[in-house]
Image (tube, rainbow, N blue to C red):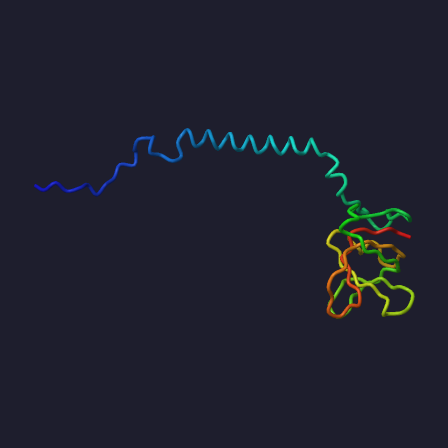
Length: 150
């Protein structure tokens, strides 16, 4: 008889060869607790960071107050501003809304918003702050981040 290697392998090998042994699990648990702990520590050290970037949104159209500002307080990002009456509709696929301003159509500001629901302000005179975007058809296209009801 020849000495043939066995086709069957024993899967109950020594645990020291197992990559998912006790040491691995212990290190994994320590890393998870350190991650959670550092997140809690950072959130307690900078509580004002979340408050400064918080969005103030109207709950419904009847809750909108004249003089109140809705949206982000980030005036660094949203530094461009304009005033006018908010109307539904963009121009050739650019913007969902536009501000009607004195001087005719050439003075309209076409608007999108990634942070404020502009549908609450339709038909109202508002002041907006936003970031000017590159446009193909619109004379002025803005991503609105902040709205004041006038």
